[in-house]
Image 1 (cartoon, one colour):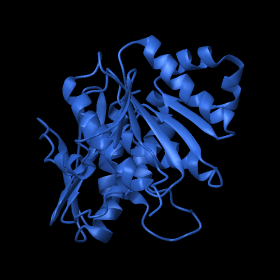
Image 2 (cartoon, rainbow, N blue to C red):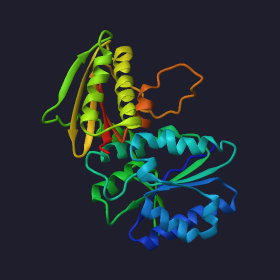
Image 3 (cartoon, rainbow, N blue to C red):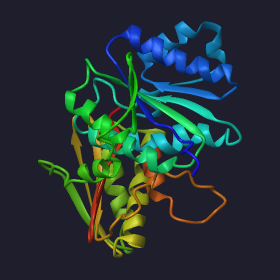
Length: 306
């Protein structure tokens, strides 16, 4: 039986020196082999890698993960798949660092689920995705969970198989009821008043200072979540909106059940018909959290206040 071509190691590092040495060695190995290479890491780390690579950096696709991966649910379709799918004829290397010191407790569950779902999304693909973890700056539980989402672990001493690898447990472990807001505005909607649900989200956003294209994004996200409820959630739903921690939160709940763990994370050919509402919400939002079970689904989209 042929070996699985997809590789997803976690890189544990303790200092800038270890980080730069390991990441640039990974990049240079790829460039020497003629492989397409992308680096998507937080801006400070990106600058260190670029400086160490020097002129070689021009051959690498460089992305600030704090922007491109602000919403962890956007990383698979808009960062990893976007690059890998452009180079299907060759082995591809990507460094992706979705979890860094400063990620909030609200964001972390979505980050962990993202790391777990990488394995499902890219199984069978000729691809290596290296995920660095700052063992000094991150909570020890984050490091322990990295061993559950990555089949292979690395540090300065070498590489080994993870005995704790269990990505499905991580996906389900973070599929928990979401904390209730202290106060919110809400509306029950169906096919007769979906426009009112959209207007509720847009009105709250405008009061919080959103304008122009970003206000249109919120209006569209609310419309897509509402349409999903009509089509897949029993024909009706409830929208709630509120402000929390410098963000607008737009939540839609209904009687549906999302059974596909990669829903909203697969790129969709615009020429083909089919559901793409959750993908659109992932692409537009700064964070998306989901809790789903038989007969009940809640999707929360967060938008950073300008």
